[in-house]
Image (cartoon, rainbow, N blue to C red; front, side, top):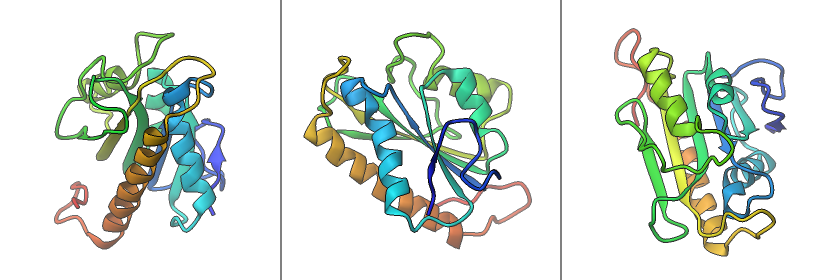
Length: 182
């Protein structure tokens, strides 16, 4: 069973796996905590391959960049604030497309998820496969409960992440240096 690490970049085994799932958000930030909620659910359900690490992060960009370094595939789950209905699940393949800045909330620093991904793209430090699941939130106030539709959306995102991890297990790259595609 995978455990949620403290965000130091190492999984429960002390070794980096081929796949990293990061839950981003504020611990007590209402719907902003959905990323952390999601990875805790993922870890508690178990059944992940041994090479999958699960961790939490605040969303500060440089921390995220250090977390994903060395992984072949990274999945990030974070709350989104784009104006869509609460509970909407957005998926970004960050190797293919840039994530819009301002899409993800990060109130204490101007350098969050989207900015970290943009910088990693410029520095050629994006993981070979990097997918962000943004779950549209409604209430980001400190101490607010997560909305039921946001928690339900987290389950949807986790099901998709599990499918993508399974796909990675079954698809071989077609050439040296290429990442598997689902």
